[in-house]
Image (cartoon, rainbow, N blue to C red; front, side, top):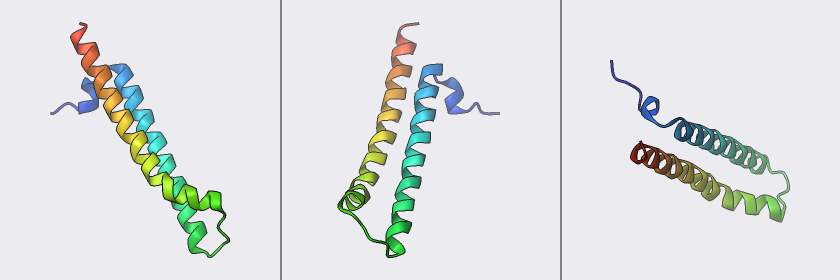
Length: 81
């Protein structure tokens, strides 16, 4: 049976990747709540509209930084063995 890719990662890489995915998922959930708020026709403030515009980009940024960080940590750990 094949081994899971995350099982071969350095423990710190797994930590960074797991928490990055969790945070990005929570951010996506908040963005969905904003969408529901706007779809119900409730008043939208400037702050809420700004969050609506920026949140998808921030979510992608958090996710990509966690993936790149995990890969860099894993690469460094493998070269230092």
